Image (tube, rainbow, N blue to C red; front, side, top):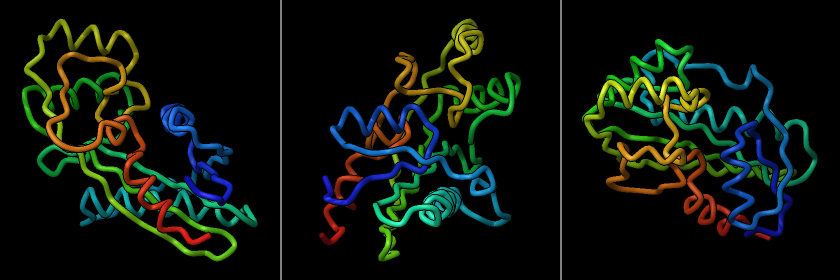
Length: 191
């Protein structure tokens, strides 16, 4: 934990839940929509999530006088293709068909921005998953549930899909906030 007041720069209910379940006391200040600009040409998935996490934290840090702002961004990636949040049902279907029967990665960029000192810590967490070769019926049932909405790669590991397994890395990273990495970075913050 940290002695600094924590501020989560996110609207994600999953990130709030992970922090609360871990016993952190925090407030939520969502970043402005403009802080969430998309991909930059030539940028790797790792560069994308670290940049986005920094942009979100920077946006909120400008509006607070003191505290430790947590910015995070998460994407799924398969063969270099970034799979963010699906635009619509058909986009979700395309993503899941790409992932079916394959390994892929979930990457999260994490930024801690300490105010008023403006000390910044940036880090990346990567988790490898395998999606089994699920049936078309399982795919359509998942799409019909609406659980794909707002989730990188069109699925949420926390939704209990029996066709997704973590091969290596942090489960909380897949849910949307790498808690082990967060704890490590918080320990590095002086005071």
